Image (cartoon, rainbow, N blue to C red):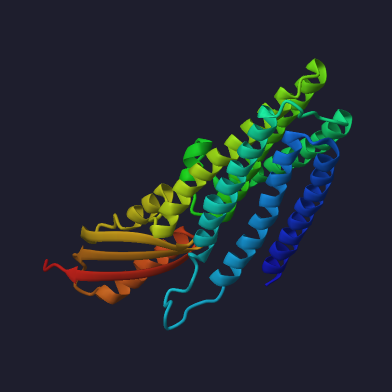
Length: 305
């Protein structure tokens, strides 16, 4: 309960930070007319919507089992993450590209108060660097196999981590491009670089949407255990008494829940009960995966000695 309250408090703090960032960038955009600040305002708006939708998904996932959803609604987090990727990220990216392209084609487009724009962007850069550093620490804690970053993100079943870290990483790239665009605009007195920065930032959002949509689609329709977890399960099932694994299937019901179904052929000692042996195997699997809530359904057939 205490951990849950801390997570909710952290989410509220993150949401407040995004709201303040949105207000700061929106005011800067209306005062300057900068395309890159418009793009950054869209980023902050997406962050706010993102936090709200993820909170809804998390609440749905905590509902527990019902007659209709007998394994609970844990994959609601995957659904709302998919909604964020397909509508908010993709829609925001397209909007940013369209608006920045309009400024690019507008011969009267100018950027006013460039110093203010630059100051806001450098504050945003500091915030995004901090967010990426925090996300990277979480990635390192979970990436116990020391996998390359892209492979780890593809292997991860944690939609919050996948969405949050990817969004922050792309946001850092976007604000870096925005700073380059506004500095080039200031140096050359040519607003075309401001518009190009806005377009590139929007394209980054679209790229993030495509990557996340692909990953969440796979999670939504059902992914099995990660490679490392599956190896741990198979090591336990390598017990000499198990002479054949006739079937083994796994499915993530949520980031924290794993369903395991197996059909085994056993060759046990005369005084050993199959039910007792299966109970031991199930306990070993659960102990090997302490971070997951594991549901084991194992059928067995004893082969005569």
